[in-house]
Image (tube, rainbow, N blue to C red; front, side, top):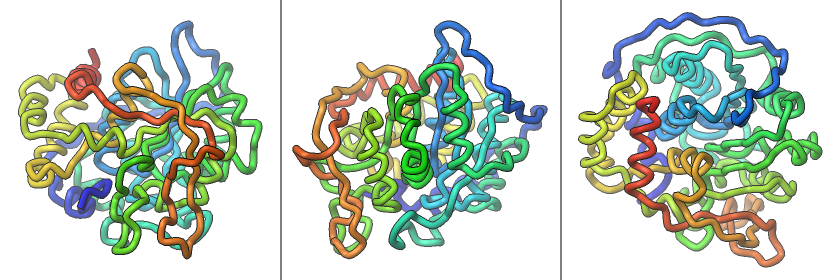
Length: 346
């Protein structure tokens, strides 16, 4: 099967003990918003914090023209809140940052009971075993509040990188529709518009995992009017992680971030060798920095959010649906170059 984050529990388990612990300093989060320096773009990341999310977040944290103002964790995807928050804080510390607020939202979707099996969800114990440095503590606010306040308080329009189920994002946009005016673009990894889905169940072959885990959250997001660039399976199916890429990263990686990613991928050698592990979230992060790496075409798209429908969670072509940009035709070699350069902090 070609579903996102294939055998996630196994992927995390394989990586246990591969990395050495680091201990960078940690400072308390100062919630006072500050103007962005010229040429620097504020970003909010919403993620369910699994292995491909790690790669995307580390790439973004190393981009000099962007500053991550907050990371909100979606507890409805492939990580528990505890595991996802711990991973986010560890990634922030690994990249040498001290002041990025992190919070988790609900572990229950806005509607229905979709989601991955419990044994696939990463926990605090499995994340700790990856050897990430110990980060700070999450902020007191829940993820929806953190997402909303960070965008409202930003001194200029914000980019959003959404890498997991859209539970937090959909809830925030429903409660505060004016957020749309402060978001210049939302890059969403998810969906399958003109290709098959992730085979999330025996009967549902049209939905992709991020959309399936909270279809209503996705529907609220699409229907909010927020500008969306959708980096779904239509694009990511064309960029598998290959053994050759892992070898190259191992040889060329010169930073703690690159070494961490190389160890993750080495631990996933079986999935990579079988051609079932793709650059899902990393592609979305790179597209946010460089739109030219894919073709973006405006499409009308709607999200099926009906629990009893066999297509629940599907992102389907719909002339009357939300007008969004759909990514296709990624430049694989350029993507690989960008990721290695980014993880090396160059």
